Image 1 (tube, rainbow, N blue to C red):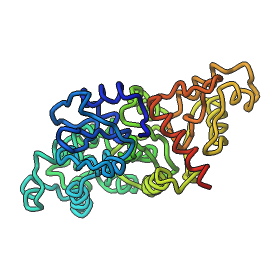
Image 2 (tube, one colour):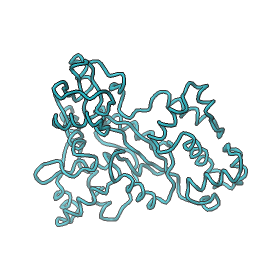
Image 3 (cartoon, rainbow, N blue to C red):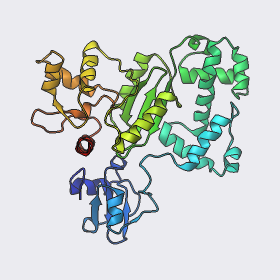
Image 4 (spheres, rainbow, N blue to C red):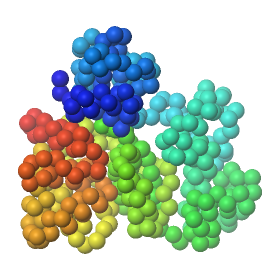
Length: 352
């Protein structure tokens, strides 16, 4: 069995229903013959009745059946088919607000949609719709379209309602935002080691982080200040390309990302991040080695701090920086993820 954490830690994650470990391991329950995700809400088993697997395939080969409650064969954090259908309905609505009755006719329960959107985006489905309609109006606003006309075509009952929604989303009235910076699109992307939040504008990717990172809110606030643009749920060409490259990376088919990044920081931070991108897949560097490479051999602590301030995980591979003793220290996404990523990349290198 290949596991990313010791059995005691995995068992604790299982009984605590710790969803941050979703995709890291699977638990086979001997008494029922099923296997589950760490975050499964089923009855807590005794330790002696549990064995752990690194993949769903291993659990299946051991004779376990997938749990119907936590559906371990589905990628952790993946968008369910009904939600994909709902996204399509929103995009096809062309500014017309979808009501609860519209969702029922599409065989989608409104309460289910509300819970899922609240958990994924931190807003209700209706708030998501408002954000998408307001964001879609921004290009026309910049081109000089009257606010009253935009309110009508965006599906708002009144101009005042449009202005209120616009101000809530962008933090300023429509007339003040017409010349604002580019919109920042945010989207969750499922990975085998947990869902990630990606944010991109027309230039490239500005943020990619695991959603359970403690400092994520701070990173987003810093990004908002530096980018001078509003963040709204959505999609663009860079996010679509990112999803494709991440899928290939986790499948073992991609060793170097080739997507445009927008990594803004202090001059020192940007030098560190540029050096991190030079570390080949399957290799590691110590903080001291990175410090010497950028011409500041005594700035080991500053390098470690810049490493921790990286907002674009995986693409700027801060997980490839390790302690001088070879230990996988200091990773905001969790040491178990760092270990998983390094093992994954070494496996890719051996396969070449």
